[in-house]
Image (cartoon, rainbow, N blue to C red; front, side, top):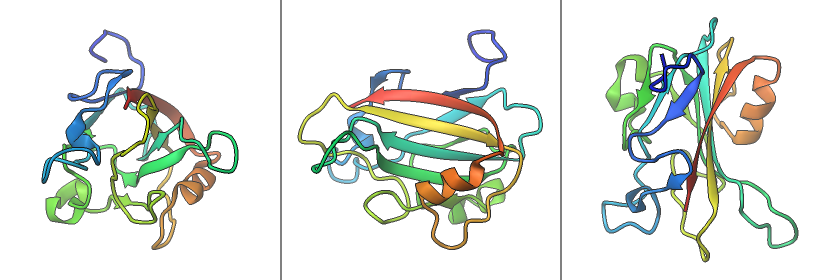
Length: 169
């Protein structure tokens, strides 16, 4: 059961309330070693038949210098087994050393063209960050270079459910 008593597929974070502020140490504006730390995430009530999960985190208010708002990707994580109930704080870049069920998880490239979490550093604050978790009926085979675009294309027809957590920066 979700903490509110519902059976709804949910994505939550111990450090971010839904539509709450993204703490500074998860951003590129933190201090020293206390910056760009991937946030802890937990999920509940996976849809029946879930074989893997995929996560895409975007700034959905990022402006394109040449036009309209274009979401900016901060994190892509694929092939999360359903036995994993969340990602601990600072998980990004440590899936191999954590071992166990975390070992097969793969982080994709963000829009800085590097794998893993990269927190925001914005000229203006007030942007919304969407953490979207997809429950899938199959494993994603995306090759060596995982991107948001390849992930979203590969999950078409395989999504059993979606859970969203929103944060503000």
